[in-house]
Image (cartoon, rainbow, N blue to C red; front, side, top):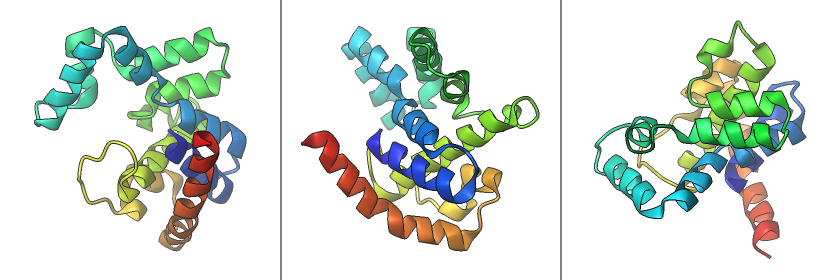
Length: 173
């Protein structure tokens, strides 16, 4: 979560006019639903992870099959309950499927694309869950949605990891 938050802050600052603090918070909270689901039923969520790791399906589909809801639904509901800004709630709900927001709510679309690219930065650097896919960040869904210049993506890659290490230290100290 910290890695995605740091990436989202950098991405928002360099590729959008979005508030970088809002982007940081959205990146930090994007998977809060997973935490709730894991705490609700550890064994069942471990089964979700095992099925996904064995190639038995997409995470959200497996979550819905075993829990009847996905981590985005749970996370968005919790953030709404906590009175988070509507844009963060909606971005949490749609960070995997943000394309439909393009015409509905462009700012939330952009924030969701930032979260998507932030998640890809973490995957690229092997932070958190790693599905071992090789990622071309400049061609990722989030980068394409943001119209990101590949040169800027390279610059962000250079800035990201040192900032992540520094930020992680703050959370762990």
